[in-house]
Length: 84
Image (cartoon, rainbow, N blue to C red; front, side):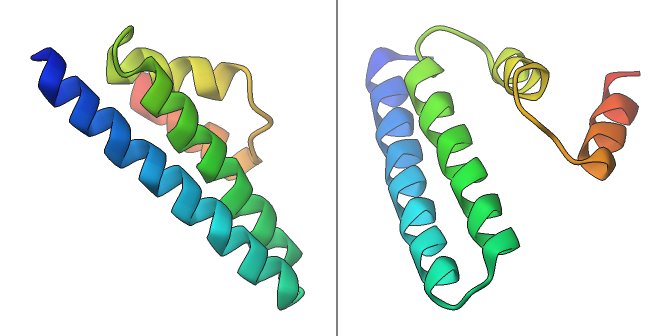
């Protein structure tokens, strides 16, 4: 991927991270704590993904995120199915 494309992709992912973080505040205000935590989780995921755009391939980013993040049982099962 060209550097210009990587920069554009990284900027898009950071915008998505900030938007998702903003969504978490809305969920918190409404008292939807599970949804709030979910939005924070994905906000961090998008931000890390943006930062790693220049260094790692997508599968490596996902694998590292899964390995180092607390995941609910259903997501862990789905990710293990994908790895087979």
